[in-house]
Length: 165
Image (cartoon, rainbow, N blue to C red; front, side, top):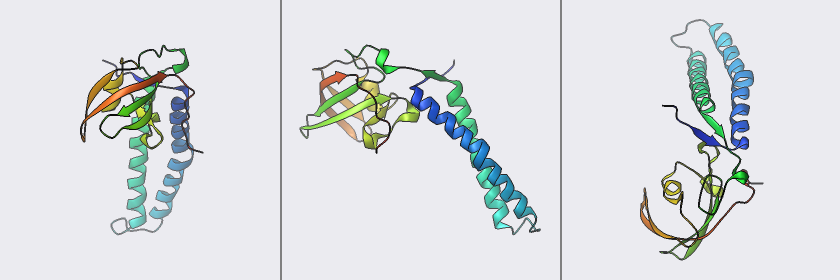
């Protein structure tokens, strides 16, 4: 069964740019470093060679991960979705009932998430428990750091800001 990876066009383009950078800049640089290290002779004690080979392996692994994610990508335009209930791309304002603190999250794709600026992956424990809920709902969320109680103050769609300026 194919694992669908929803994301916005921004996330898809970000992944494509990373692939391009790895293939056209980073990997050729590492190959050159390996060639230069080979010129130093004895490979057993050639730290530059071993470091470059390890870096090449990491780049190749990341390219494999990216190929799988991109292969499973389903580009979603959140502005075209209904946001009466929480769904992909929804902006959700929560009230933490334990601390009486308001928190705002936007539900995005895994490759787009950045909790520091309020972007959480649709696959995160909190987002999974938010999906399908509505404004005014109270619920207890089972999170990695324990159970928290929230009230959903607002559910809406607004333009997603992916990076801090």
